[in-house]
Amino acid sequence: MPSLTVAVAVAEDPEVIESVRLAISKNLAQFILFGDEDKIKSMMVDHSLESASEVKVMNAENEQTAAMMAVKAVHQGEANIVMKGNLPTSTILKAVLNKEWGLRTGNVLSHVALFEVPGYERLIYLTDAAMNIAPSLEQKAQIIENAVGVAKKLGVTYPKVAALAAIETVNPNMQATIDAAALTTLNREGTIAGCVVDGPLALDNAISIKAAKHKNIQSDVAGEADILVTPTIEVGNALYKSLMYFANAKVGAVIAGATAPIILTSRADSAESKLHSLAVAALVARGE
Image (cartoon, rainbow, N blue to C red):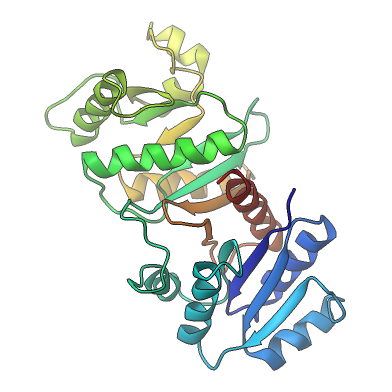
């Protein structure tokens, strides 16, 4: 891969520094670490990174300044990826959305997670579990386009997209089913392109061929979905955390829709999860 640089906002966190070490050991990227310089350098010693030529440390007096500096580094072409360190999500997003030096494109920003689930035969994408609370139909269409763009850059030639709901038929009392059917129509009309969309589909029929056949569902997506599109953030967040905590799935995630990939992992995420997200973001950045 070509050389990529990651700008990390508020990098003074042991799991962040360990993910940096792991990424460097795999020749994944170089790093500019913004935050409390003394704390960062002390942690770098603890993780045997004090002499790493792939790391540059820049002092920032507070979280807001670190976020601004990291985003500006990408805006100015000094870095390719923004990574959230030990600071609130709202702070880094405020910097990303700055009108003068942010990374806005006018499109919806959305969270795209990639899971490796033990015992499941392929990787599965999930969107949106972290950004859009109750997206409109138009926003859902852009969320699909963002996820399809990520999946294609990671090697899925023609993604199969399942618009999730609780049932497979349209119920006027269930907005999720109405939107899912509308997204399917938009795909068939060519408004949502580069993939095949079907819905409404319940989760079992989206990912299990056996379940889809048992219910006699005829679809190019049923049982073979690459991308799961959830109707609301509550559904996405619960499914995301269920896969992590019940199924022990490995996950990497990125915010798509900006001018550069944004890594927005939870401060509680492990170094391994942060490394997976770095790998996903690197592939997305390479494909742009």
